[in-house]
Image 1 (cartoon, one colour):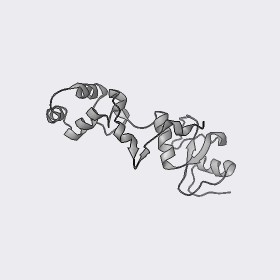
Image 2 (cartoon, rainbow, N blue to C red):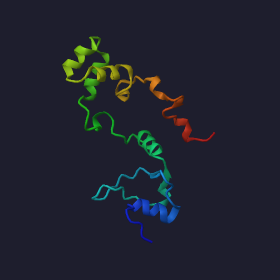
Image 3 (cartoon, rainbow, N blue to C red):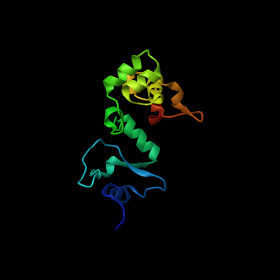
Image 4 (cartoon, one colour):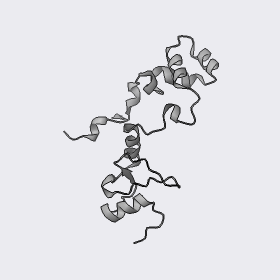
Length: 144
């Protein structure tokens, strides 16, 4: 059986666990972080694989602390110490932004907990709901 365009773990999923539904991806239940020289995860253990949506896969990354956040994100301009200082700074947001070379909206997002909440500890509850649904509900992972 040949599956052109499939990477090794997609091939293992199809071969041992069944087809990948349209609009789904193969998710790893394990935290094996072995990549081959092309960047693909090399864990092909069928017991470690399952299908799910892109949102499921993104939530997996958040839960396992594997998402590019904070200083892991190559696009950020601030260190964690700078964020802590910005969060507690009482000056105007424009002055703070000017000092750090960032836009005022970034300073605002830090102060209200939309960004860098892992560092500041401030959680913006308004961001938890979109269209009446929680953005991510950890309890949804478990059946009671």
